[in-house]
Image (cartoon, rainbow, N blue to C red; front, side):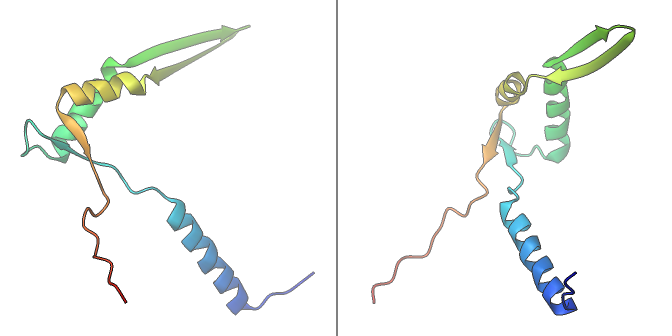
Length: 102
């Protein structure tokens, strides 16, 4: 059995954490072009309504066991959000510094 020092374990944990953080996507932001004053509450209300309209109940029976679940057609829900005026906003910084010539 190999015993590693606390410093080595801390360095390994730091590397692992930074790799996981780098692979995590940024949250997508949305804006409503038709109603620029709409915020998170209106977005969540529209999203809930669109997902409810795009949901389908699925019931399966195997022997004497019955299983039920709700599936949401995300493509239809996204289309509904677009019809309500919600559009994704780029999270990337549109400005980049000019390249300097050395």
